[in-house]
Structure formats: structure tokens, C-alpha cells
Length: 403
Image 1 (spheres, one colour):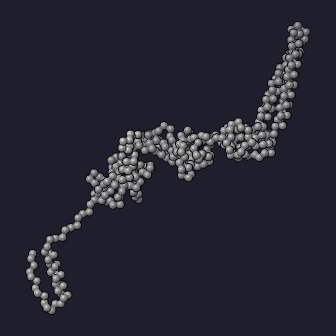
Image 2 (cartoon, one colour):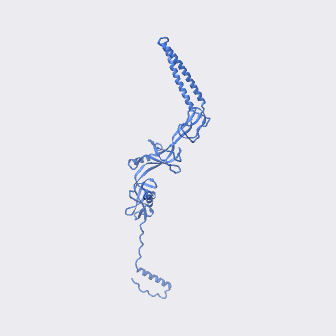
Image 3 (cartoon, one colour):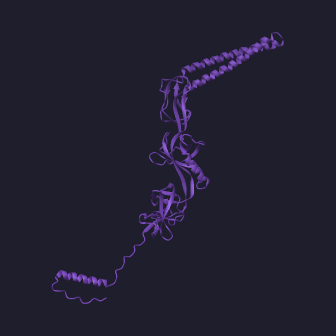
């Protein structure tokens, strides 16, 4: 549309009026020109996605365990007497057969001499009885002596022989008691604090506990498995969701958070469930040669590997969003649309969740850019940078032979 020539501005109109008049004219010119263009639509938001791939994942359960000695041996006084001397350093290793204590020997030496004298007396009586029986034997055949006299001689000989056996037993007992006055270690290990000081009477009435030796190489870790966990694991093994491995392995986390370098193996599992606690007792054995060595009574966290999931689906923890009614992730469809998935999560493994339900192999889960998506919008997916870097780091270098 063309504009007519503008009418002359009346003289009565001042400068302000002229400016307003020109503004109206410019507006009329704009209305008659080309229409204004609409702003361009923004590009789809970029997101980083991780393609879910089935992989084998170990099934690990964690429990609290207690370190116990492989063998604990009590050292006791086996004879009554005064404890004269202690010959070891408390809390230090001792060897089997090492002399630990001495008990007063004098009363037992006297008892041994008495037993030896009784044995000599019994042997003398036997010799006399044998000689008498030998003299009467030919006489009784000739009826020179009565049969009763000969039978009495034989009986006396046999009683004497029995007395010799008894006297020899007394000698052996006296020698044994004399040997018990030297208390020796019956096991290699670390000996604890002595329970009785020197100069005290020990062994009166019953064997007195003197000290305890604990063998700590190898060593045990005892822990309990809740019956619910045992049932769930058994069902998973039966249906093939978990593949059992030969000899379940255990790792141990110390109270300071460090992992003990030596693993262990389960060597005992109780067949009965504790009625009070509803748990099953298990025991792991491991070599106790690494530093720091484990000590009995120490509490550790036991990481028990019971098998592996052959085709587990993993998603990074940062991709999972917690909702009031569960957990969700966002996935990208083949049409590049965003779709919500509700999940049922399982174990946690290396900063990733094992997904029980809600995902399938090949799904592309949004890991980065979750805050920019809405259900149904179109996005521009890119490979998850952290996953790509991890894959590159694990791949063999150019020209290097793969392991």
C-alpha cells in the first residue's frame, strides 16, 4: 500500500506535535511492509546415554564377623604344689615343648623314691615266693608235702607278682607327676597373661589355669548369616539367577576401612538355625601372615561372594532417580524420544545398581543431562563420556598384544 503525501503540519502545532506526527507516519509505513519473522525453534537438548549390556556380576553380601584363634589351648597345673618360676614373656610367641613354669619338685621326688622302694620290696617278695614254689613243686609230686602247702606257695607267688605290677605303676605315676612339675607349651602360638603369680599353691583340688596359648596362623573369622538371606540365595541358585562358584570366597574390611590383603574360604557352615537369633553360623579360615596380623576378638566386615549373576543389567548410580514410590530412569527410544522407566533394583556393585526389573538389554539410559529432559521430548543422544573413557582405558594399546 502506498502512502499519500503527508499533509502540512499546522503552524499551531509545536515541535512536540511534529515528533508525534512523524511517529504515527513511521507506524503506518511498518504496517504496510513485510511481516516480522518468528524466532527459530531451539535445537534438541544434548544428553549422554549409556547402552545397557548384560554382564557377569559377582553376588556379594556383607556381614559382621569376629576374629577367633585357630586353636586355643589352656595351660593348667596338673599336680599340686607351689609355683616356683615363670619362664616366658607374656604376650609373646612360644614354641611347642617350651618350658613355661616350674612347680616345686621336692615332694614328688620323695614320692618317686618311695614308689621305687616299694617296687624293690615287691620284687624281693616275688623272688622269695618263686624259690619256695620251686622247692615244693617236686615234693608235691612225691606226696612229701600236702597239696595245700603247694597251692599256698603258688598263690603267694602270684600275689607277689601282682604287687610288683602295682609297684611299677606307682613308680610310673610318681615319674609322671614329677614330670608335671615342669609345665611346657603344648602348641605353637602366642601366650597370654599368666593367671597365677609365683609362690602360690596351684593344682589343689582341680587343675589350675595358668595361661592360654592361642594359635593365630591360620586364623578364623566367625559370622552369622540371617535365615532370610540364606533362603533368598538358595532360591536364586535353584532358578539359575545366580551361578554358584566353587568355594565361596570372603574378603575382610578392617575397622579403619582398609581391606585385609588375604582372602579366606568358608570351612564350616552350621546346619542348624539359631532359634534365638534366626541366623546360621559360618566360619572362614585364612592365612594370617600379612600386616597387620589379625588378633582374636577383632570385629571385621565380611564380604561374602556367593556366586555371580551371569546376565546382570547395570546402570550408574547417578542415572537413577529416587521417587516417593520407587526409583526411575530416563531412556531414549529409537525415535530419540524420552521415556520414563520404573525400576526394581537389586545389589549395588561398583557405583552401579543391578536392575532386577524395568530395563532390557540395549536400552539407552540417560546419565548426563537428566535435568533437561521431560517425558516425550526429542533429545540428541551422545555416548556417556565416562563409559567411553573406561572402555578406552581397558582396551589394549595400539600395537600391544591383548591379554
